[in-house]
Image (cartoon, rainbow, N blue to C red; front, side, top):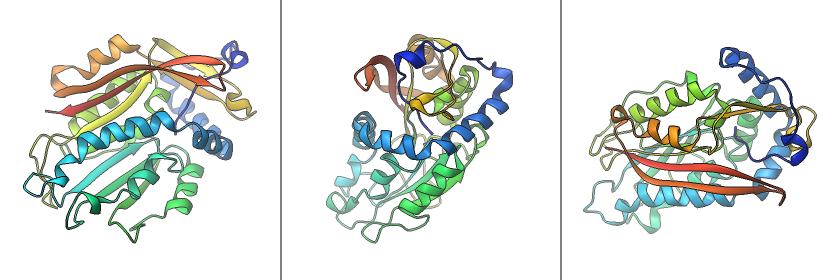
Length: 281
């Protein structure tokens, strides 16, 4: 599940904006929307994936460089990665599952275990058809585990994940829930040199998330992407408050990237998004 910018006509619409107390009903409606517009959304994402790929490359640069040197922690590691709002796997899940460690890991022993979550059952089904649901690459050992449902209902042991990715997905939550998710993600990320049952050892886990730059208690568009069933909801704390939450001492996060980037939809509307990469310390 993810989103992008709005057109002028959509921006001027004034539909009912649900309150945070309407969270469950809002998420149910979001699911219906993403189920209904899956094909349109996936076509759009395919054509507008450059920023996703840019920041995924940044994340991978922080996450996997140690496998290039067998003497460094991380060689032969199973990297457990949670993707929030995976959609049908375009392009992030697909990039991860096809990531080949062979060029940097002399034994080709490292791999990704990707937990791909989305609110939309249609998107998850499309992703499973597109990418499979188990050992999906004969060239790599990378694995996908699909989980359909509300990201706020997910549960993982503390210090169990090497990375969490959420592109254009957490912004669909009421902003109060966004703060809760940031704190939960921080707990899920591994501390430096923590290990799991597979013996993976290395630097602290890393999160890649993006948020709305301007504060908003909630914004609704009734016909996003020109779709009659394209009802959408977003909210944001704004950059300053979001970074305050990320940097809360209890989270133990070191900010590696903090960038506000302007995006255009069809060359029409500029919308600013905050991109954050942070490492667990």
